[in-house]
Length: 88
Length: 109
Image 1 (cartoon, rainbow over the protein chains, first blue to last red):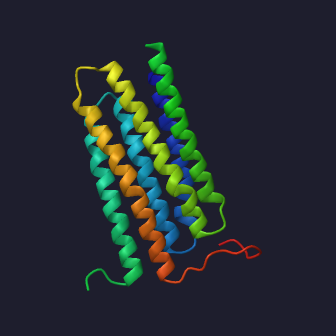
Image 2 (tube, rainbow over the protein chains, first blue to last red):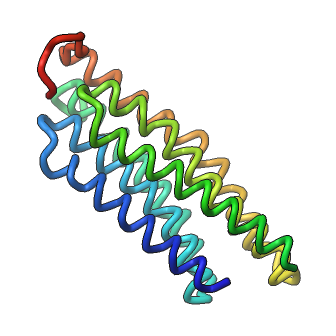
């Protein structure tokens, strides 16, 4: 059973590498912000699986915090790119 | 126990499949809107399925601690609300700043 978690970790890491190509190459700021949001969502699933692979329960708290930080960061980037400023 | 492990393996495999398909869509589609159309749904469902498999594994492997499955269920709830909202916010910002949708015959960008 622990092998399945290891394979899942490897495959999620491969998909994160595929998304990182769009984050590095992709034309314009919007493609890069969207790629970072998608990598953050994959990171949440990766942290949950890693919590079972290493048998450390505190990875789930880190996953919760990372979900909230990823959401807020993406919203702030979207608002900044839309308005050109953050406070008005 | 073998049946539970089989269900967990199927859920993790389905989650990885959807995540992989979303990433291929992010690489291959020609436009910003179509790329987000591919990944905004596939990534949400893939992450939800992977965490659902983790919940079922935890409920049958460590049945004495019920706080961790509650945390993971809240995580699924949060992802299913927050990820489409973030995708919609980026897309609306791109539309308001004048990113044109791709039409047939144009080059990729």
